[in-house]
Image (cartoon, rainbow, N blue to C red; front, top):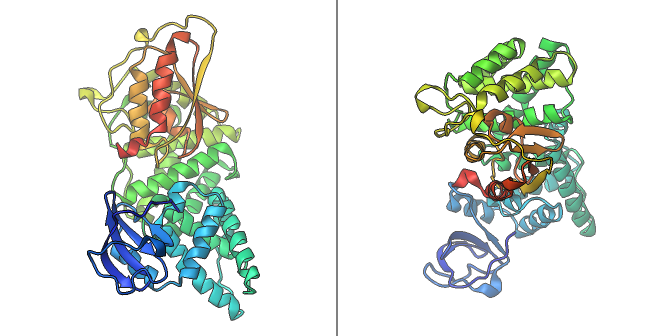
Length: 427
């Protein structure tokens, strides 16, 4: 949890002796602490000596609802979960997430009761969860280990290892702020179904731990959230999308089948931009599996047309949310020498380098007269190509490298690196 200095905090509502809703200059907060609400009244100041935890509701979430849930959960469970999430080394966005901590504490409370009664919950999604959400699954195992150590110290029956599945799903759900765990369950099933379609179409076996498949899964997760929020990438008939379809016809047909399944399962068809992006991912997966060379052709075609052509009328290129500056390869400076300059940046956007953040970044990169490359792990992309950048699959907290073989590009790389460090989706 984030540390706050409790000064000038005014009580807005008293829920019980241990939970109050208060506000300060930065907004509303939920305060817990033994006796903090005892004889307290709205309008009074918070007694800082009684504050144990301060929760900041996520934007758009009802603080009264979260506070009401807190009144029904023992403070010991809140403390247990908060300490476990912090000890597991989760990012700050998670350790400060009131909705996640409340949901986890509620779940862990019931899990403790089941363990005490010798009961076990059935989690049939173990294989899917451990493969599709490997990062969150590892975090969940760390959280569960901390919880069980604390329970053992109190001579309370530990929780079974299968509880890491439920914890994982809570982490995934919180990461996308959907507010609905049933959405995460549905997403998990659909993800597995879509991977099976690719395996069947191309006669390959997909390994979720590989780079290309992992990035495809990440893309699908963000796609599902865009569908839930009615924020799909714009539907433009662009030269880039056409190049992808022409270069990767088999991958495009597979993407269309995937689109049909998504419409059937989630009730929303995909825009042509979204299908083009799926095509590029599928082509790269197939190429990596040594089944087809379509991905390399698609990447070359995208690079050829991405900076040269935008849709008629100045509409954004595939995936863009705003106008793309006109560019021509002739305006890019010739590399002056072989001196490679690089800059590293940690992705600050909460949604990663996808959709709007990717669009803003590539527009900025295209304004410079340099050939700038952005790389993640061993994958490289043209910094001015929206599709190439998005296909990197850079997530929040990932470290990327910007490079250019023109030593006069130092200032440009500095500005672009600083841009990547910001939360572009919030701007």
